[in-house]
Length: 614
Image (cartoon, rainbow, N blue to C red; front, side, top):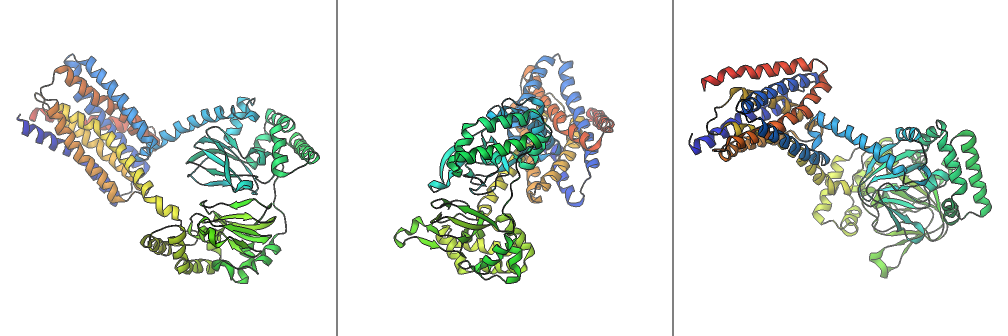
């Protein structure tokens, strides 16, 4: 066959074999397949593909005495596929199929267990803990992730969680020195443990320096472990009685005297020994009347400064009272604004580094502060430092979102507030957004503002990039699954080899359920249909191109090279079948999947009779 004819013919055959890919994506517009339907189709396609691989690639190699190079190629193809697939899964490519998603999370779960046990060896308190009690502790652990700059806890907060870093870095900030970082923590380091075990408010602020993954256990879960173990309570009591680190913490961070320290530790140890649990931390009771009284005399912040009296009890019920000593920082310049503040007593100094010549501002009881950055989801433009000993109320972001649901005037007032010139000036001058982007943010926020949702500058800036990265990882994963198909067609179309209808049928039949299943999964991830269809259409075209290029590259190749390349494609394809197609089919369809796979194999093999006609 002439060079041009061979190229075009191979391209055409590649397109035909992959035409069922966009067809599978289009099917999701008119039919949402059930798990059982996907399972049957996937098993049928896997059987058809097994027929194509074994009959049209491995069998000819065996008959011609080229089994060894074909087997070597198959091993290499499988290993290459596994390596590339692993890398793509780490970037989000595992989302392309249910089977790859399940496999990814199962392997990650086992890895997390090994890493968790290893991390406990780095924490002196848990070094001697036996494996059975470590396993109980692991059952109560939550694996949580936070983006960079997230504040895990603030100073003066009640600490009911203990953290161990699985991945990423955490910085601890000191309120006595304008929240400057005094230590950076990394993998397997524990933090928050002093406040957690002593049941006292946090003395430092913990913030994610990078994107972090943490093991997290709350007080109730830890008490469950204490109640069902024998060694852990003994280790904890011994630690409390002998730790010089704990004594230093209570003395330096909470200004306790030696007598107070001894009494506090003794009380905790007695509770652990007799009742097998840590002390319960509770905020001061009967604060609702005080909070309501404060709300009746607030000012400075337009959004809440003149709220209706009938809403005061609802808002007051969400406020939490905190205390800080003179000289301690409440928040610092350029820190994320994740809470709103209302001063109850004392004086707070606002320090704006951009307005040094104008002097600093001082807040008095009844003043809101940090409000503008809180509402727009930005960063504080100034630092707030306690000028005297202070008490202040905080409103958490989650509580504010619930208020948008409960208090109708708050929702409508917020919508109007976002349109004010005050907000626009803040976005352009304090958050340094260009005029057009500031107006765009306001327009989109007002349009999409719903009760229970607060607009965020961080979301506005990063959502599109994150979505694009996830989509690209998924698409590359799909492309990786399709590369062996191109090699199979290319290797089969070289000079001296006739087109096999069973090969073409096997590829076509296997592509449809794969595209149908993956398209449904991708749409569940929030990827628009047009992008899903574009991914499969482009893959169809690339399959044709790959088949055409492969047929030319392999033209005139030796029998050994031909067997090696054919084995390379077959090995990768068999790995795809075993790793993704059949596991997904079995998970969704059960034991009948074996029979359906056989039907797919026989259907594709039946096309072998057409080969003599070509």
